Image (cartoon, rainbow, N blue to C red; front, side):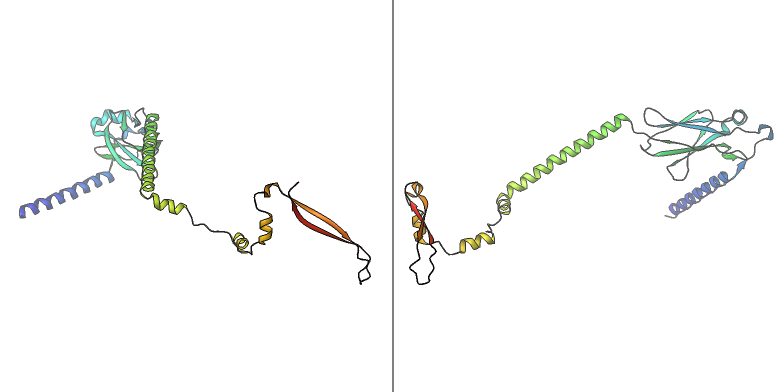
Length: 247
């Protein structure tokens, strides 16, 4: 048990020491010989290949390559959109490019390169300019994505329709009652039906087997009122409504 805890603490000390050394090397700068100055600034270009990956082209100073050989490397930094730069890798100067794979489509990536010698940055030598590129989605990937979306949408639509039909068939009687509201007679019709019935004599005169062959007739009669006590001699007209069998 004691040995286990001892190994655990030793590993923690090793990791902490390694981090401290790396940070110290990161902060330290390497001073090259004066005869090697001036040093050309590192240059990078970014482009996208057919597979959707980004290709970072690297170009450095030839004097540093000859002088320090494999002890001289390119340190590549990258960031996504407006994020902070992160270390990608230290690559040998014999590599002319780096391929960045598994990047998100539609996202802008930015890159920067720095000279390092013996794992230290070179004093008084600037980093490269920041170069950015946006990953564009390939036509084939876009079509596949559209087909997948349409397929999933169609399947979900069929399942939704099937579920609705199953619910309706299972609860047909309830749905039928819900869609058939109770009969409600409007107030003006109710008032009309509740009024007094028409005279039976009028109903009899307008009904019967010969009602279809009868017609309404109006008789006009004029009477002379000269013998009335009122003294008025103007005639009076009377209208009589009747029904005849011949029209």
